Length: 439
Image 1 (cartoon, rainbow, N blue to C red):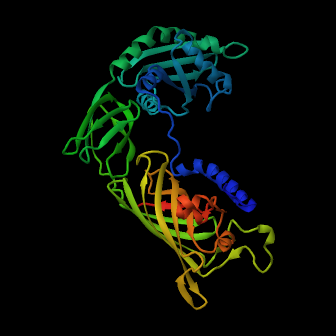
Image 2: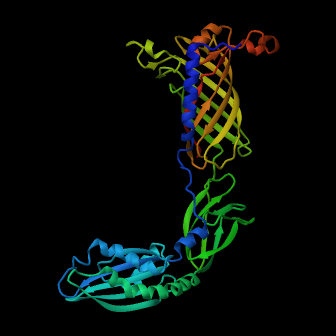
Image 3: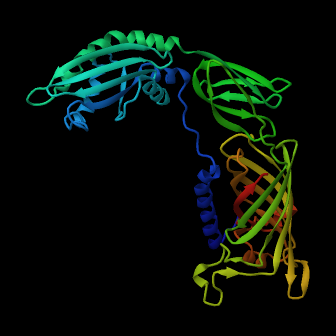
């Protein structure tokens, strides 16, 4: 039976809770991608969206009548769509004298396919309404109407104000929509990049592979704005937006190369600084790493009883020792994802370098360790990582090791008959949290 001291159980429980809490942080640097609407959903939402720009003029006095500035007026503009249930009205106030062309440009910038310009002119006894509307892609005025509405003792009736325009719009909206959609064509997107790179258009989920010369092309609905992601083996992905018109678009993209070297800056057991260098081979199939952890200066180790700290000890710890380690490992998941898992095996030697001594630790000169880790989004040069590294401690002084190493457990004595190394203690409390940088 494996014997686990009470202090070690506390350490193991704290480590487990720490790991669980850390996993969501492993993807820091890049949040989960938002769910993108499909091209069909986006087109359906934009088909009959109309921007209505309202201008106010006063033929009697300078300034604008407070009657026409009443919030109910802007709310009542939505009544224009009463006879066209699929029409989505977006009213905006345009205090300056905007031309139909300017209103059309404003509608285009807000992703509307229809536009309308309304000028309200208040006279002594009437309010004049001048309206023009059209399709954004077409550019022509497809609806034009002028009329007057009398001002009664209680002011302007907003329902009566919009009735003539509402009837005219109900008759014209289908024709304007057909013209707007008919003006939407296609455009060719051409890209010069790395051979066999993969391009993904997020709005349509279309993918294309570059040929042996690094050239690819796509035919897409235009005009429209698209978001693309380009991925190439051993390179960082590139994501960006581009505007595609019927005239087409030509781009050249050279993704940045992923370095074969990675550098880790971390804290072991949240106490002592550590550094590792990694070298990838055959993509991510294999990596070698070398590094060290120094105990010259650090915070009090996690396996110390914080209740025993006194004024002399403080919260810092210093021991003239350094761990030197080597290892080989491999990634267990692909290079593109929100987080990646990996494993490695290696050996560590503890060097004592103080008090006139420079040699390996006579109590525990070496350990064999297994490292299990998870790192954040590998699409970014810098990402968080977390490692758990249980170690088999080669020692002839297990009692001293139990006091000096975190989370020490002992295997049953009868196991040593079949597996000789089972007589050595296992330290389960080694963890590292830090930042991994890949140029």
